Image (cartoon, rainbow, N blue to C red; front, side, top):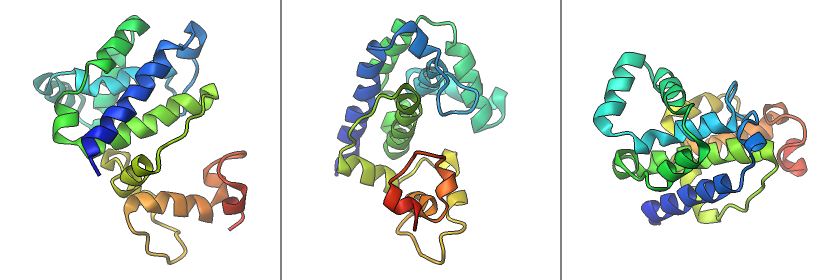
Length: 183
């Protein structure tokens, strides 16, 4: 499995999607609490910020969540076309040094954008398996292992679907496969 190829493919999809969004869709609330589609695209600019600048923002913000909020704020006034262009040319330090985490983040945030817009996509199995085997550690995935009915998931990432199976309310109404929601 070539993680860098998977990452390149995953990063290309939101670029393509973003070029087709209307002004209203850019302002649509995403699945990230309190964030619009535009804000999520601002958050995805991590790779477009040089590592020294990112570390400085992180030191000032004091936490990963604070750093993310600062990035969203920093890019909130850019024209949408510039956000998309920056994302397209962005593969930088984050993709280079943490490609599995970058893949997981790009994957999840693409879903955060697509679902509220009703823009479905078919995810290649190889990419999904890579993300489930190496979830974004900054999303604190271990919290989803609790309550997996004694099953030992193969990885933390695979515990998330197990959790959804055990707790159908965790997906909300209308999400997930009906046959899995009743398990």
